[in-house]
Length: 403
Ligand SMILES: Cc1cc2nc3c(=O)[nH]c(=O)nc-3n(C[C@H](O)[C@H](O)[C@H](O)COP(=O)(O)O)c2cc1C
Image (cartoon, rainbow, N blue to C red; front, side):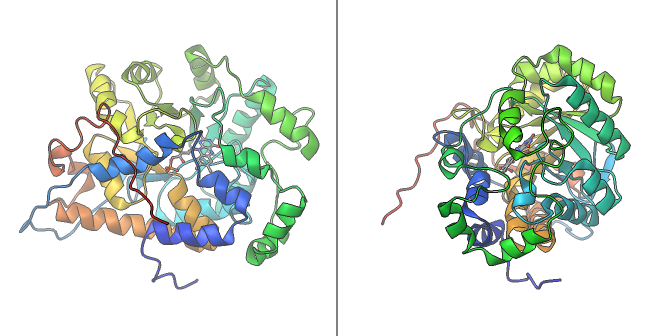
């Protein structure tokens, strides 16, 4: 195992990933839709929430252990589903799932993954969560659900905020595809990424493992891009949620809730958890940060007297962010880019390092705030006036960058 002790924060991993990963895949991860305002606010809003330092409290015997939908977790973090992950590092989904399993946290596999459901199940021999995009091809979708059951997936995540696609300018400019097309620009860029290229030679797959060979009419790459462009189902509605819940028959997580009205409907749908998420700032540009939406959703769900769990993702780059989300009522969190940077930097070791960093930051920060058990953390650790008005307040101006 690599000595990564000098890697001390997620930002270190981001910089290394930027160096090592081909431009189009790094840009795919590190961008938001259109003006990227929501993408930036996801992070800056966390910074605006202040923590209360408490002293001379016995801080021995601390624990971050808790549960997410009844599963024991070593800290309140799960790996979020992300597409193209096997392009950040060869066999990326298999490695990230293994690191998550070793750390005692859940891993979620995207419909748009490179490794297939079966690859991950075989490599980890451990239950994981499967994220479903609802597609127009209903046979394909039913087949995905069947494959997830056969692979022993312990929950289905229904992503609700991708009926239509937000635009990321860089993906269009870079001509994002898996694998990259052999254009001059791509070849020149790949020549500067020898480790990535070498590892990719031994990759199990270089395109979407859940789709190619499984969806009707998609046998090769040329048919794949037109198929995916047409497949996301814009007619998806709450009736479909009930239908999918029945088809799946197990734990269901609805991802992409931002507003109290939708949170109430999610609670009534009988789902086990909802994720307050703006898809990491990749869909509705101009939406508030996820953390700004959390308190209103928690209040609305409490008024419903529902026991659905509320989780949060989007913008988590530190253990302090996790603690702030928990303080504002999230039972758990999910991380996207924080693990992807680790994966792009050092593969499985890098994901492990990202998790260690988040764990330590959350643990020590919790102690500074006078708590020893994550399950007892409430908004009493937050400075009043620094979080209540995030949703309605004017975002801070971006700092001026000289030069
Ligand atoms: C590169 C990338 C790909 C993503 N792909 C998916 C996906 O396939 N399915 C999905 O439900 N969410 C997807 N998401 C959203 C994540 O699940 C999660 O909501 C988001 O990454 C959280 O924000 P964060 O990256 O700031 O932690 C993706 C996010 C990123 C960054």
